[in-house]
Amino acid sequence: MEGGKEEPKGGVFIWISDSLKLALGVIWRLIKKSVWIPVFLVLLVGVSYLSFEFGYSRGQEKPKNIQLSDISGFKNPSGVIADFGTFWQAWDLINNYHLKNDKITSQDKVYGAISGLVSSLDDPYSDFFSPEDGKKFEEDVNGYFGGVGIQLGIVDDVLTAIAPLKNTPAQRAGIMAGDSILAVNNTSTQGMSLDDAILLIRGPEGSEVVLTIFRKGWDRTKDFKLTREEIVVPTLDYEKIGNIGRIQLYSFNLNATREFYNALLKARDDGVSGLIIDLRDNPGGYLDVAVEIASWFVPKGEDVVKEVAKDDEVLEDIKSYGPGTLKDFPVVILLNKGSASASEILAGALRDNLKTPIVGERSFGKGTVQEIKDLRDGSSLKITIAHWVMPSGKILEGEGIDPDYKVELTEKDIEDKKDPQLDKALEVMKGIIKK
Image 1: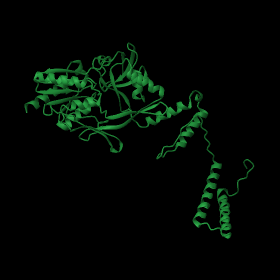
Image 2: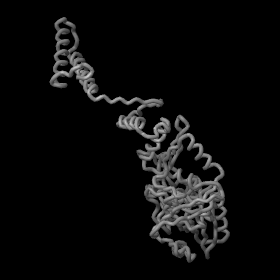
Image 3: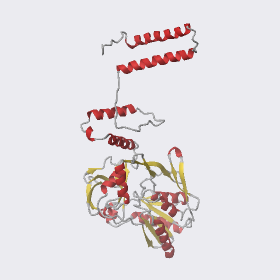
Image 4: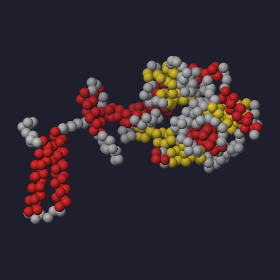
């Protein structure tokens, strides 16, 4: 007995039997009165009635009540098959039991849920920004800041130095491409998003930051104390080695097209017989710059790279602008694990179209495209929308570009001021010139 009402003996099956008798009685009375209702409609009404009564009875036995407040604009997207009941049940339990629930707003919980949703993508380049975080990130990216000169990435869920930039605190301290950054100022980077790590390492010029580094071959971590300074990214250097020109391109910034062209003019005036394009520790930059440089070598109209979205939709098929003046000129490319993004696109385009040999190490493998999508309350998503596909069909992301001639550069080589990778590139070039 509950609330003064006794449950019928025999349980739910007796109840169904009684309800069935009632429904059949109603149908029989309609027939006796010659009310002409199609048989299938009568049956449909009866079944619907029974289903409702059965579901109502079961719901009374095990009620699940979840009350929500401060939530607006909820709409279930079409095509989504998921048990949101579990989410709201968790929400309700947090509201009822969490020790500090009164210090967290409902909107904070929503933002936390969206962050978790983005994390489920397992994509280090996608991120969620609340309105406040988005504004801070934009100010840090576009404004004046101090840094240590490291291009960062995520490798196997670990914050990693893609490349230390030339003449920066990181390079002077001896940080190398491929180093794992396990902590920043004793704050673990495990599970930290790439954007959060960037904001943590940046800071006022002249201030100090401590990076806890682990490197392959070490038996323990090492702390690097670096002083932040204004980071000015260099563009390129040119030198003549014997009868071979070497263009060391550090970044695909807005000055790179003009400076690369000037370096080509110097190489022509020097009368070089071949050209080494050194892309080691070049973390990339503007795609258009990579395409413009590739167009000096790749004939007009040939593929440079494709931007391919999900379901193999080609968003953009980027081809050489031409003129391809240097398509027959001997070229060798240098890559290492710090070569990423635009560097990989340039190297891949020249090898796939012109069979240009590559010397060094496997490149980083940064081959995705991100866009900022604004949300209705001022928050935003930085989301991966496509990946780069080379003319050969190779996908860059996670794969990188393997060299034709693999040569590693060790710490001892650096200490002894040796460069076996450049030596091998010169050897390969001399072999091409002799043919």
